Image 1: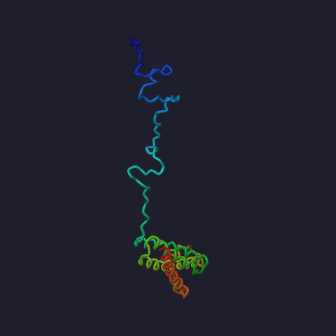
Image 2: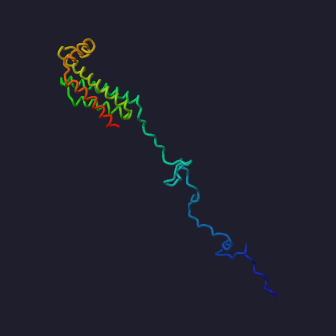
Image 3: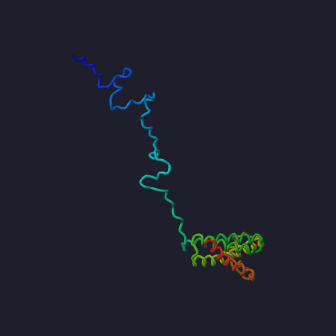
Length: 205
């Protein structure tokens, strides 16, 4: 006579420390409680769709480095000529104010006028021969206008009349005075302006 069968434990396991499920085959042991009911929840959203990317990852949709704008275009002949004209007007006025204030012409000032015109024009229009030629011509005109402004300032001071009246009502007297006073140095300053314009254009190019 065989002894009666021993009572089987539920699911074929043996109780361990009063836990009837501790010995279930193929079942992983439950994780120990951490005391944080939110420990397994995903992180809260931050509003940044790229917050989870690692440093060095590229932009979405296969993008790489940010777009770099192209450098400003040069060799614009018309714009270069326009800049030469504007620079010649400004430089000529400054040259005339200096000459009229000290009542004499300065060779370095004439060179500065030409260099400024040629450099500014070639910075925009490039080393195009048309831009360089326009710079030289406008520089001669700028020095000439500066000489007329200087003479007008001197005549206004001598006659004790406003500068605007000399230029507006007696401009023929100004040009006549320039013709009478013109000498080798006067034409030399005109030539220096043109040469300096070519040098300034080559420096910028």
